[in-house]
Image (cartoon, rainbow, N blue to C red; front, side, top):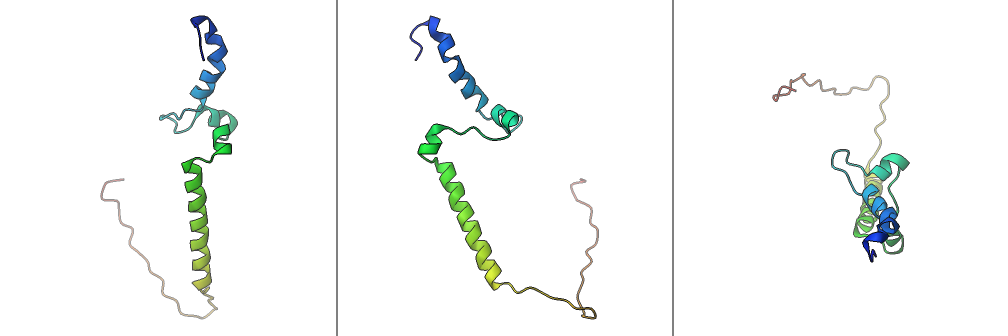
Length: 99
């Protein structure tokens, strides 16, 4: 901790690290991730996983489980030359919002 105003330079690296790892709203990224291409890893997150990291791991696991369940039930469609297929041609509709 800063004991006196004369010790401010000792805490400067910590303040800089905090500033560089803070999310910026204009870019949606941290300055650290823009420079190094990856998010900064905090020792706290390495030792004790954050709720965000745990939620991502559970989400990945549930997505994998859903994919496997779907892949087990789906049957591939194989078309041969001469088979009749229904092809829908949807009209080109402009966006009502004008975009």
